[in-house]
Image 1: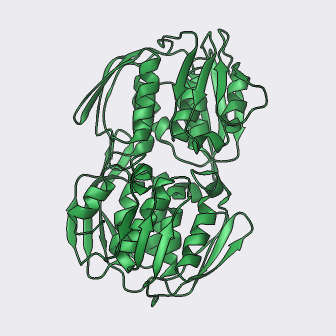
Image 2 (image 1 turned 45 degrees about the vertical axis):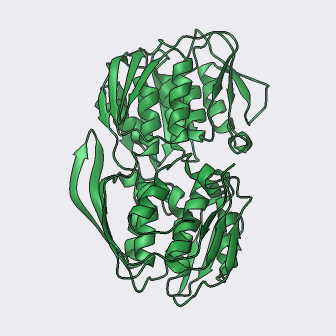
Length: 446
């Protein structure tokens, strides 16, 4: 158990360039899973050394896939769509990662034996029925029946059938699980998905896997033709925009500072945070834009912002494009001019912790007037002149990495005497180099 992190000094002005933000976690986990189903050696550069990505690698290794890691290069020797080695009494551990847990289930629909899927205490509280439902339609069986949380068992079938499925949640994890299962089925599987992250589809297109996508206003229509093997591939993972967001937040809230972060993923379904910040008056520029294997990439430049404007986001805003950055937005809104409203955030309560509740709790703690809107929103009365000069303690937050990092950024930018319990354990699940990068630009962590 790590000691609490203590912060009692604000960061001094900085003008920094960062080239070491870890690769995007969503793409990383998907490339591990998909390359394990390819034929031959895939070479993946920039896989982060986070616990979540390690969980995806360990799961694939348990399924008989050879994976070698050499510094910044990972070699994955895939054996084809039906190349997993299944054995009796196999247990796969997704750790803290819902992405690993939900997505890998889709690739197990042909297992002749029961496979047990487990996770840590936090993941074991989260809903898995959202992926169980479509996988049952493909022909998989789950035990115990009606159970919606981990641990659960999945048993596949030799007769995977193509399906038609509609997802109204807008979950990229459901979509990825569907896509991986569809690879194992004859014929064409069809999915209507509320708009959300589309990394899996982009990788499928790049690999020439038979996939067709039709975009409607709020939905994507996806068709996949199964039982088509694909070759291995090389991929260089761009920087994670959700990790970049913490340093953008730090820069905006600090005085006379600027930052340039290189080679960042700027997929349209991942940059809602940056679009909203521009509405709020923040100075953010995407430089050196390019497209890499279907994904948009750019360098992100940001400067301190003296006056942030309030923002009003309705239920119709594409919250999935910034769901991981919502708590950072709550904090930024608390130092803006005016009243901000955020709605349509039901899925925020389904994360590692109840993040909407924690957003409310942290803002109340620092003296911001705020009001919850049912179980789906929050209203924040900004106070640009707020001074943080008290003692603040964060604990019992289910070791949620984003809550820990948001709080650390808030402390470094705006002061106070902070104590964050279990922060190092939380951070290493997704961003183990976070504190090292903070120190490299002048932040002091005790």
